Length: 374
Image (cartoon, rainbow, N blue to C red):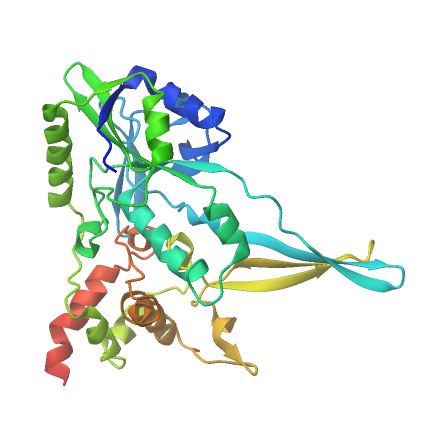
C-alpha cells in the first residue's frame, strides 16, 4: 500500500518523539558524547546534534559546526544499531545451587520496545544482513529475534555524503528504500526548515497521521529527489564490485596482503564498528561468595589471535592471514553463506582504523595487479 508523503515543520519535531514515547517505545537516536555522534536514549529534540556536522577520512573523525540548525547534518559515528540488537555483552544464563543440586536459570528478559530514530539507508541494509544471520539462518538467536520484532524504525535520507562513504557502490543508499516504518528527509532552504515524511508501514502511517503535518507538494518531492541525487554524486569513496568475490577468492597469495599486514595493528577496531560483523565468544564467571555462576556472550573479532585457536594453536597466526580472512569474508565468501555482501558501504572501518587502512583502496590495488601476477 502506498502512503502519501507529508511535511512536518522543524518546530513540530518534538511531536514525533512524543508520539513514539506515547506508544510505549524507548526512543534511541543520535546525540553528542565524547566528541562523537553516538546512539543513545533521547527524550526531546534538544538531545539531537543540532547544527553539528563532521569530517571523516581514513583514520580521521572530527565534529564540525554547521552554518544551520540541521538535526541530521552529520554522517555516521562509531556506533551502529547492532549494540541494541546484538549487545556487546549479554548474560545468557545463571547456575545456582539449590538443595544439593544445580539449577540453571535463563537470563533472557522481556525485550525492550525501541524506536530507532535517525537510522540511515546503509544501516537498515546492515540490519537486513544481520537478520539473515540471526533470524533466517539455520540457528536463530532468540534474544535477537525477540528484540528485532519490537523495533520501530524512523529512517533519515542522507543529505550529505561522508568522506569515507561508498553506499552507492554497494547499492545500499543514500535513499532509504526498504525496511522502514517512517523515513524523513530534512529540507533546509532560505527561511524554511522542514521534514518530508514518508510512511513505509501501517504503524508508521498511523504515527505520521497523528502529527501536525501538511500534504507534501510536487515541489517537495522533487526537492527530496534533488537532495539525494546530489548526495549520491558526492560519495567519499568508490568500490568496484563487479567480479569482486571471485577476485578476492582467487588471489589468496597476492603480495598486497603482505603490504597491508605491515600497516595493520590487528586492533579489531574495524570489526567492532562494523554494523554487520557478528563474531562472538562466551565467558563464564563464578562468585565465591554466593556460589553462583553466569555465562555471558560478548563481542569478539577474527583479528584476535586466539579467535581461530584449534587445539592450542591459532589457524590464522599472522596479521596477514587475519586481515585477508576478514576482507575476503566481508566481500567474497559472505555471498556464499548469505547470498549478500557483508559490506554495506558505511565507511566506518576506514574512518576508525588508527592507521587509515581503506578497504576500497585495498580492493582496487588487488584488482589493478591481479592479472599481471597470473
